[in-house]
Image (cartoon, rainbow, N blue to C red):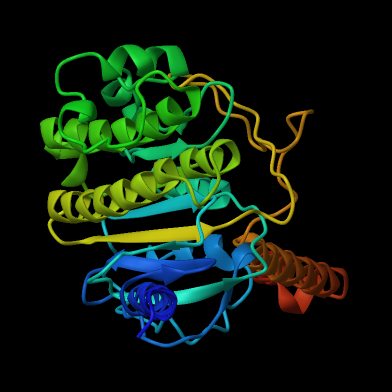
Length: 362
């Protein structure tokens, strides 16, 4: 066999092996992978696609909340009424075609990858558990790098927020740089630092939860929404065929696997951990950032005029209660007024009847 034919066969074998590895062990293309889930949250294995705009409804249903529209998707079955997971962790990875995530609960293809947020789920958590201390942590690519809500903000006040703070954190003790095999990644390049900063934040979140285990043992559910764009920046700067991108993909796959296992264990094997991989979103999503310790909450973050929401999922129930109660009271008032108007005091009233008898005796 000639050297040229041998090289061709070697290339075909390598490509086939890589494709089989991706399809067998992880996410291929845009997809949703459930890394961890308790037994009572029943995800069914299958290739049922789910739309990107339905991800918030899926997260709400896994946490036991109601949604405005029924989710007609066979991947999630109805669970017990009185059991809900203590936390839901959703990690969105942008700029990647596939991640090797073995030992997952289930994986599904993602169609219509439009931008989405979990703001509606966060508002539900705060409205139902206002007296408790739910952790609602949202990490998204923005000017301040971090977006947080909730009364447990003081626990995460040491979390690095800006890129300058994260650079300083990477040079401190306990940095992920000491344990990660950087290989072709550089500590000085801007795109590499962005990716490493996101890995550092994932590490710091689990470290803070380990120091404050009471947050994972209370009765209020916690919500984590983490959006990572480091791979997208590496792909734009170096390209997907670059060694930096390949090394970063391998690092992120192992980090996400460990992150899911750590969070799942901290919540007593009672948490749902999902990973959404998307190459690019079909439309840009803008988010107004704010300080991580901001205590003021507006009723509608999407409105620049601080307007209230027109309705929520309790609107129909409250409306029917008020409507029929008012109708019943109005009918009761009409019936009472009609009977009083047509009442004969001499025969229908005991007061006048006794008065008439006394008059006749005299």
